[in-house]
Image (cartoon, rainbow, N blue to C red; front, side, top):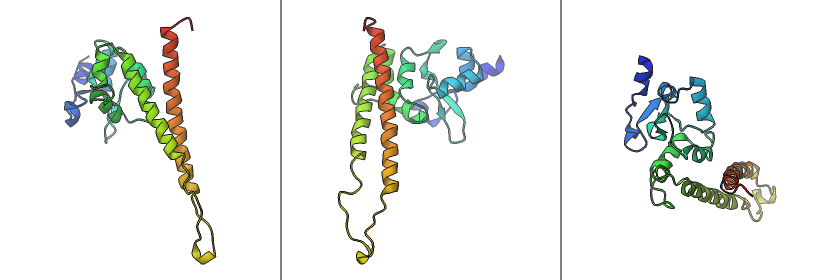
Length: 193
């Protein structure tokens, strides 16, 4: 019990002013009443926001909790940003800083219970990713030119093209995940659909 109380004490960090304070896994276990494995699994599925330090310490921003549970409406927003695609520091920074579309931090909007506005901002992020896909889809070269004094007419653009294709696929997966979540939410709001 003493160990759990010590683990619940926020860990000081230079990031505290922006996205802290933080607690460790043991503090999350004590707060939510779940096992260490359940904490890790929830963070991996982005049901909890986790940030990892340079020395591989897993920390959890304290503001994501509301009493014995997670802040209402936060889990669906977190789920839009898979941990393997969006770094926890980046997501925490976005949630706690002013979003141009919302005019305030998304976290503040969630505190007021306006989850749909935050999800709309995520939809905007998806549109941004689609625009990036259009840019990435442009050909690497629009015409060929002579190289090596007409001995060879070869431009090796396969690798950069494959890298662009990988980025397009990753962005498309994120866009589809956002769209599926929004469609599921529509079914919740309008059960007769």
